[in-house]
Image 1: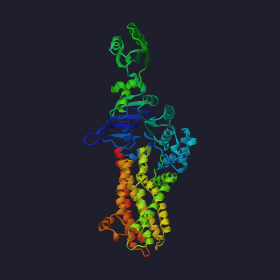
Image 2: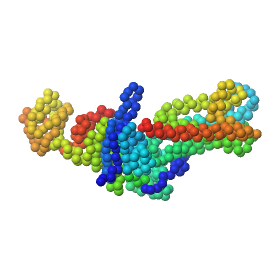
Image 3: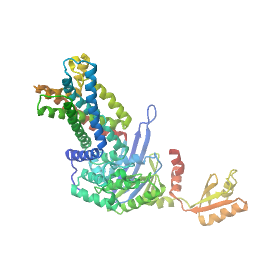
Image 4: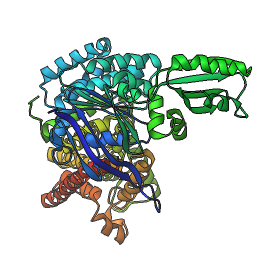
Length: 327
Length: 262
């Protein structure tokens, strides 16, 4: 039997939305479980319920109904055991800007019961591991965003937790700092028995870091599996055609839908996306049909299904559209 | 790890250490909290001496009367800002990280208040130094000064914990400052901080009886007098201590309310 590091069953959480408005349903029967030792990515747009889930599992918040166990302990009845077993890296930077890196880490270690000597040793070890050794004695307010985020992750690891929660670890970082942090988080999964729950609204991040994915939409898990399995469930490949002129009268759409093995055509201005059975045979057919009608084309690309396609499949909306809606 | 989690006392020590360090890294802020009471003391001393001929006081004895009052007023006014540090922690992820850890909630509250109380201690000593330079003299002995320092710290801790609670409940800097100013001005004037009860209107004296800041002022003045009424000192300090413990406990419960709203 597989031991589960995390078990959430039917979590419901509502927030008051103001007077005379119905309460906001952040979680609507969310259920999932994570086996020990893997990195689970909770993927979804802003407001899908990812952070609420993390807050409930870290004992910060309490669900209206449903149960959850973390490292074998109930998050409501065994709060102390849960708090001892977890590390929490909140969405916003969680270090004290007035203290140095070492001071932050030592204080955290001591809170969890490490002796002064052990706390200092652990702080030194973590600073080295995250490449912050030379900044250990500087106040955190002098750190760059990427350095602060690394220190946040280190703070979550001081007491060697069994489960680490990373809430949107790279939001707001520049691409270089993001790639850097991805390397660090990627190495975490090698840690003995460490289970990581990572929330993100970056498809690329989920694809890169998570061994298991759960797609969250409107407070529910709509799909679960490895990134590869989720993508494999989608039929065929994705073909992207860029036209010189926009397909205003639907000629191109009609033309392509007549081809065998081409379906799910989406037109957005000059761009046209379709799902095909086999990319290798579909591309010449598509190009040939367009050439016959003398319709000029700028570019054609064929790709394996991305998580964006997976997201579209399960939520009926493209990820980008949802993000823009939320912004 | 099987290490035992430390309890309230140990956590209080760690958290106190954190805030003391932060406090003394901002010497400009400390300097400001010291200049302010000095100005009040000299300003009010001059003002009231000039505009009213206060019965029963000579020039120097009014300064002697006013000094312990300004000490309590300073402790009260400074404590109103206490919660801003909690707000800063909430605006970052520090508060959430702490609350998801096994840290003692009481220690989280007490540590910050004790560190603030050291500022009150320094302020009290400084206000007395200025008061004495301006001519204030006290007949009471060392015990009088110790009582004054003790009750001023209790005022700072008690009202500081309320400020922290308001911070946890409102999570907003503006709301916190608004509320603390709304509360601290009436508490200052409905008391014997500046005016002797014998010349104050009756209703002010009635209100003052329920005012913890006034208890502190009375205890301090009594203890500093030539022949202190120790039973009054004890009664008023005891009430103040009970008040401080009660609001401290109440404010610690505000962590739960905060957690319910996140």
